[in-house]
Amino acid sequence: MVNSNRLTYCLMVVAALMRLVPHPMNMTPIGALGLFSGAQLNNRWTYAVPLIALLLGDLWLGFYDATVMVGVYLGFLMTAVVGRLLLAKQRNAPRYTAAVIIGALVFYLISNLGMWYSYWPRTATGLLSCYIEGLPFLLRSLIGDALYTGLLFGGFEWLNKSSAESQHAYS
Image (cartoon, rainbow, N blue to C red; front, side, top):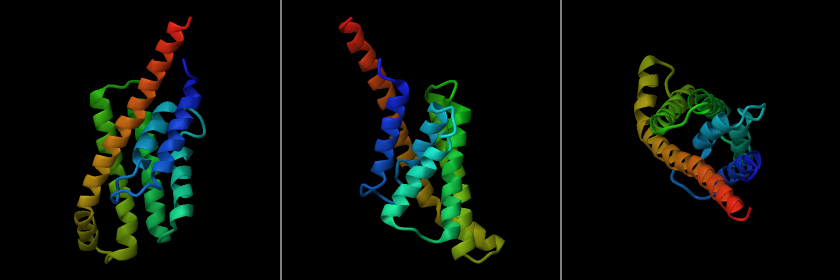
């Protein structure tokens, strides 16, 4: 069997690098990476992985409004919390589905606070308008998180199983 930690970190690096590949807005692997690190890691890196991936991508792609960045980083940090709470001990289709939906919703709610504060009137109407205007981005986040969550967790399980089967065949 492959070293589970090594495989986990390799998949995380690949996911982080995928952010640099051209993609539709809000369809990056960072939300799924947060779920994956929350589920797979049980150390100080659990919550740092999505933030480090985001920071490295921002170093390459460029920084943006600081208030918006704080919201984005906090939102992705929370996806690791969701992964820890929903996927660390038990994994099945309903839990994956719930993690993707809750992770995307939490990210949407937190990151849009930064958008509202920086670009919208600081009123209840401005906040509501910001959230309404952000709905297409929520949909894209849901699609991207579902796709990349399937690839990360599915890839991990497939590579683990393939490695165990090939090791068994040669022993």
